[in-house]
Each structure stands twice: as structure tokens, then as C-alpha cells.
Length: 467
Image 1: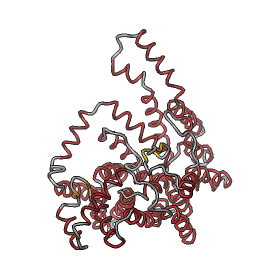
Image 2: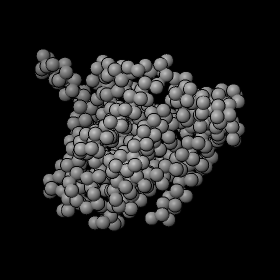
Image 3: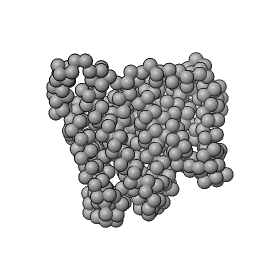
Image 4: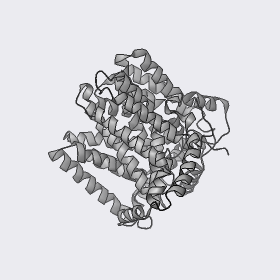
């Protein structure tokens, strides 16, 4: 397993390092490099950088600034260049691969499944695309994995659990507080639903204490001590359609980048004799078909016709009910919710390989999705969900290993499809899709090799914006 892990890391190095300084900058990368260059020209020593970080409580102006200080440190060693600006993020990305394997193996208690998970993570073109950038994505993925590891230590009452948990939460908060909060919601959800007694009390005490501590330490010009109340007020005032749209975007991101929902259907069909009720795989298949249909552009005229028919047939219908009956996103969310409920029902059954351990990544996915949908009033992009999507690969690895036990060739085919293409996500059938087919990893390799001038801008990996 260690040799296989080293091989995976060796294979990822060219994808991360090759032409690191050549491809065009994302606009936000340009902003970060400008800030880092300004700080660099003040000629700070390493001690000065640490003092600056502590004095500003982890921020640079109004921005969580840990990655900026790392960029300045890289400039001090290698000089100012795009390559030097991106180097810290890539080095952290390399370190996340063995860390991910350790976390996956600890959750799954199955080295083979953990290796499957690591392979899908280390070859994920969308995440590699983002982890090369001079931004916070590598740091948030690393912080998410460390947070989960520390939380497991805390539940097992290890002496290192408490200091690690505090350190991971503080690091995560100052790397990106608006990504930390949704992940913390998911972990807290697991703590409430899946732990008992002293472990639950200790974990909740740590979460509340650290959360309040770092909140009070945030610079007052960016966030005041009552910023959680401001968040709650924003949620209360946010239009329901925004939350509905964010739920749809999060569900699509997880399906597109991390966990293809079609894999769940295949897993349930292949393992139906061992784990599932006879009706479950076919129900999941019908739900998957509903997911594809409600997401496709072909349904737009159907819903528009339904809107007109409802308006003429039942003009007195409540606007709240009318909007949801005539909006395809309502059916989309219902279908995804039922799919998640069925999967939870199966994965939480006691069985071999400690299947119930998957409750942790699943609940973090659910908690993060709900928190982002409630809090954010803008698009939920891949980089915000990068840490959560990383955990979804643990579920992918478990399912692939379960399929491998019963049908090895099918598992190999599914693994190749997940690594190389977007076919299992049914992306070609999704609406508003300018590039209906991509060979994900081959596409990324060809871009590196050809010097494609398209800027490294990622809203979703399947939407590449021109310069």
C-alpha cells in the first residue's frame, strides 16, 4: 500500500508542478500577488511576517491572509514570480495526498478502499486545477483533513485530540472563515447525531469555545463580535429562491467533481443481495433518472407550459405554492433529498468494514451544503466546496471497493470513468452547459502540454471562461 501511495504521489507531481509559472493568472490570484508584493517591498523578515500575522489577527486588510504571508515568504526565498507565488499552494497540495490517505484509511478501516479514494482524489482534475493556484484551496483542503483527523482523535479521547482540534480550527478559520463555518456545521451535526456521553460533551465544548474565541479575535473593521447574529439576520432576509438555487448548485458540484450520483445507483445494484432491499436499487435508479430529467434543458419548455397552465386553470393559487410547482429546482431538491435519505439508510446499517463510519463524511457533506445554501447569497463555486468535495472521495473509494469484491472488471471500468471523464455525472444532459463532454484528466494534461492560453478561471470545472 505504501508503494502504491508513493506511485500515486509521483504521478501527481507533474500534474501539479509542470509549467507552474506559465499558465495565465486567475484575477483573484493577481490580487493576492499584488498584496503579497506590497508586503514584500516593506522588506519584512520571517519574524516580522509572524508579528504582522499575529498583530492583524490572521488577516491582510479585509482578507483572511495566511496564504498571502506564505506567498511573501516564498518571494523572500525565490524572488517575485508566478512560479514562486504558486509554490506554497502546490507544496501543501502534495502533502495533502498522504494526509488524505491516512484520514480515509482511518474512517474506512480498509487500506484498499482508502487507496481507491486517494487515487480518485489525486487525479481529480478540478481540484488539481485549483490547488495549483495562488489561493487558499490547498490550505482549506489540508485544514479540512486535519480538522477531521483531530475530531476523530477527540472522539477516541487521545491526549493529542484537544490541542490538535483547537489548532486545526484556528488554522482553518484564519485560512478562510466562510469555508470553515459550513464544515464546522457538518462536524457538529455528526457530533450531535452520532456520538454519546463524554465524547459529545467534550467535542461540543471545544467547538463552542474555539468558535467564540476566534470570532472575538477577528479585526473589528472586518467583522464585529456579533457577526454570527449578522449572519442569522442575513439568512432571515435572504429570499427562499436563493437558498433553493444554492442547494441545486451544491448538489451539482458534488455530482460533477466528487461523487457521481450514478455511482451510487451502480453500487446499490451490484450489492443488492448483500446489503439492500430488493426495491432500493430500482428506486435509486428512477430517482437518478428524475435528477437527469429535471436538470436537462429539454424540460424548460415543459415547466414553462405548466406555468401557463397553472396560471389559467388556478389563478387564485398561493404564490408560494405556484412558484414551487412551476420551478424545476423544487423537484430537483426533492429528488436529491430522497436519494440522500436512501443512501444514508443503507450506509448506516451495521456491517463489515465499519460502514457506519461513513456517517462522518456524509454528514459533513450534508451540513456544508445546507450551511452554504443558507448563508451565501452568491454562487457557490468549486473552491468553496473543495474541502467537502475532497471528503466525498472517501465515499467513492468505499463504493468502488465494495463493487470490486463482487465484480472486479466493473470496478476498474468505473474507476477509469471517474478519473478520466464526466460521463457518470450525466453532464452532457445538464442545462446551460457550454462544453457538454470533457475528458477531465486528459483535458487537463493536454492543456498543460499545449500551452493553452485560456486563463485558470474555475467557476465549475466544466465552465472555462475565456480571457
